[in-house]
Image (cartoon, rainbow over all chains, first blue to last red; front, side, top):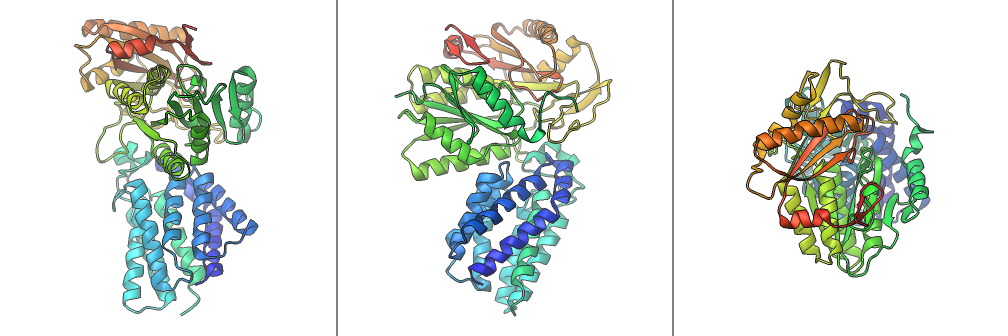
Length: 208
Length: 333
């Protein structure tokens, strides 16, 4: 995967966020403050504009631009969380990224989210989608899976992680004020994170 | 939705233009959406920066001026500002003695201010300290929540820490004063109606005419429970008793009692509430040393009120009495 391939991943994520804006907002209205779809869409639209204006020349520069733009444009909790994830990915990305390298990059992003948000698995946050995805990616790489298979496994694990947030009681963020009333709804952050992994499987999953 | 607005998308920008024209003694940076003291940076004084989602006016921009904040960052309605704004505000008020960030305890605010502090540290020598305000007893403070919300105590912290900074105290000392005020303050709020976020166009939650929400936050978040509408004396009891059972207010130099309006409640009702609150405190043997009554930390057009009690000592009272000159709080000048 080179800079252009990874850029295609980011653009596919922006497209999925725009397509699912209403869905993300509805999920957030149920247990948060109803702005996740609009905030992420505003952020990713700005990311695509920034990439168009000045195409980055390395994976690291790409991720840095994505992270800085999200931090500057999104606000709320998702701006710092996604922004920190991409800044950590920038710090760990080599000049070209193979599947194992992508797993390493994504793991660095997960570590960033955990460091920033201090959420643990089961708190009903984006970690519940991202952590199983990174684990699945590592396992697939270790088992010698193709890039396509590995990224599909990661996307599937993210989706399952997202589904698993539905019965959970939120322990972080504004949803935690609801206590038991937060159960019965999928977490909006885990949902947008699943879109990020689906985008990877779509945009980067062509090569075997 | 009936509101005195133009395009809902321009609410913050339009309001900041009005603030700038009404208060030429303040500097408004419209690009960064920050409001700065006209004479900032004040050399040798610790700079105080706060900010948060808009919709709580006069908090925070209405408290920018001598004796209180040096700068305020305005986010979208009920959405945290972004770090770029906080970095710009921090730079604008750095008079060489460091900058204190006063942050209400909401996940977004905390993380954006944290990032801003990291960005300032990475690009300049400005020393930044942060204090988190979390005084809302309606929220259980446990591992299983994001912690208590920052509400009424924020106004008291901004006033008292602002006075400490004006005295020329160090960053560490001003931060300690702010933390002490937060530690000694507790709040509880109640809503009679929902609020309507301009961009949403409809009330945030449904509250029937004969019901009220006890333990409400300042963004229309749910409270502890929904109960039938009651007379003011019973409402005061619902607000004061959880505060008194959360912290021992006896044995100090009395309290600063703050009855706050949520935005749509008239002052006459706030004084009725203040009367009831005073009587409950007298009954509990807690003297009132100072008071504040009015809409100071609001939730758009929500009707209702909150009560904040701050356990006072000599230092707190002296700093409370110090001169202040801001759009929303002015005395001794």
